[in-house]
Image (cartoon, rainbow, N blue to C red; front, side):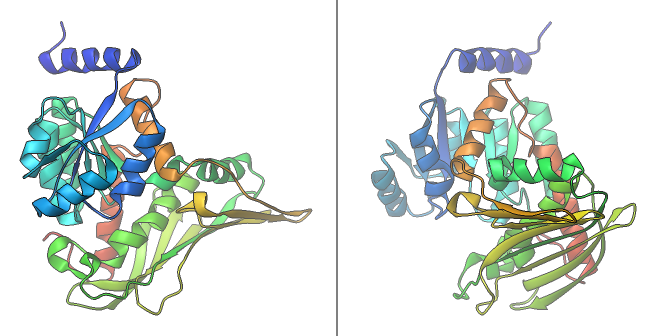
Length: 345
């Protein structure tokens, strides 16, 4: 016999399969929200963004007017408790991911939470536990993973074209000029590894199929406990090594890259983080060298479609809560290796 939560989940899947609209509420008027949720929702008939709340009511009203969102609430609690909302998008600062995601899950809402999933692994584990208990789905918004560009990288490495893997490298760097940026705020679980480094760290697992062990890490410090740049050495087992770098220093060079070297050749990818604005894969082996680019919708549109497919029971959303816990454990290990305190502690 189905429990109450199981019956609710079954009924919801049936409604989604019947074409019912998925109604989102967003917490905060974050700069990422239009690209990550609003624009993709406009392209997908099955999704509507129907409510928003922000710390500043005026800002929420301006956001709602700009993006044609009908309901503006004074508090996040009101968005979460709205009975007509099915899912919550959480783009709040890292320090606010755990508490508000758990509140949404306990209110019976599915949650798409921005990366990284939490401030630290302990918080991520709490979030994953509540998702299991409530029967609601929690996904981590590693949008890059859902684009055909990422699928092509996985295909090439998995094909054996490069031979046995030997070494991986990943970089993501974005210059951040303003010291008032939340990435420089310890109380908000800021740091370069949290915001930029989480991508190439995730790619090490995503593209190799291996869980890395942190061997060492070195950081450049800005404000107290904040890593402005980070260099990480990783061991992927079976003599496979990896190196991850990231930076948000004002003078760093903007860019994202991924490299995989094997016994028979090398793959070099340009812009694996946001391939919809331009990308390139170069494959060089002993017998050939070729370059290709991969077309596709925005990474965020691909991600939102995948989220819908999960809720409909059609296809699993790979960056789920359990995967988010693993990712946060690796991030925690990076900070430990660099002699930094864990975020949120």
